[in-house]
Length: 215
Image (cartoon, helix red, strand yellow):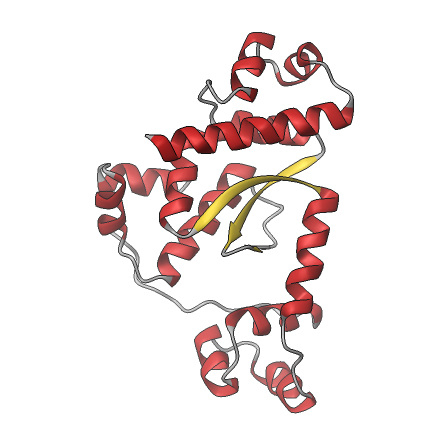
């Protein structure tokens, strides 16, 4: 598909840019990631399908991270204890749930079996970058590879775009932070981004609404 091919080319171009910044040759990147230099060349040209785990390994070698960007905003979540695959797929699952798209319906949109969708979202099945990019695209997001500087710049921009909460609202969050996020949003009439960022600054844990398990 054209969209998948464009994702391969975009990510391949970014890998090449980051590799050159590090001063690595194709062979050195290949040696550090246990793939062939020919595969690196094809990947950078957007002609090679690479798995999400291999992409995560490449990003780590280049001192970068895989990130989900939603509507031009970096989706930052504290999931460092998980693998890159789990972190990315759980972020995408959260977005799907937030958009109220049932798992079986989304599987139909992707043209895959619901059981396979379940395995993908639970990170029990390794997926190619094309499929991950396609899932992200359907959810209005994109899969990106970012350097620390790029990530920090987007984080700062995201925080600056948030409206500052009043002292009353801050006190309300401190008193009610153990209640679901939907409750806080309704009571404060604030966006989810405003509340999450303020709670992160206050070192408060954000409680998501409990949803029934998808069969």
